Length: 261
Image (cartoon, rainbow, N blue to C red; front, side):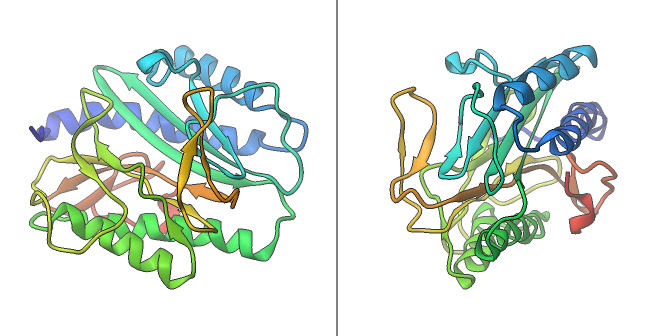
């Protein structure tokens, strides 16, 4: 069942999402050579708890950390560790927070410059595809309109959508219906209605896009070892257009890159 939120509930939900946006912005500034993914995780947990929130991923089906930190060919669900980041790496940082009964969820991919121009294009196109998908999150559209827009933009630039993982509804539960694939034909699936809240999260690979899960049971990597990027926002469907709940200065209808965390 798809749960639609009232206007009052969206206001409450916004607080969790602003916290996610703020912490991700701070983590972006921390990313530099020599910093470990474990360092990022410790900062995030302390920051979230100090703000009165609860790390949403930690303990979820046994996941051991606050962040998912996925480096280079790792697509999602990377486990923070003593791995030190180095120049040329890209690291995807995914954060979920529970605050005042509602969840927020977003992700960014951060480069450690300088990086190859094609890798920079991967990050740019993946983030652009997120906004192409968000633009479709309007009352009366279909869920598959989002994924269709994402896939069309990604493949137009010679990259591949990772299909094994999808976006999802989010609200009082971390994962709610509906699933939000990043591919497929338009005009399919549930019709979007006012009050739906969706985590839209394209995952894009430079290579073929097929993935496998490592022996840790969590980390998904590309089978061909090609680099991958991941961007995500939590978005509310409203009569005034899509609202990026995890935008730091979000407002009704704003879908520009300026909202990016």
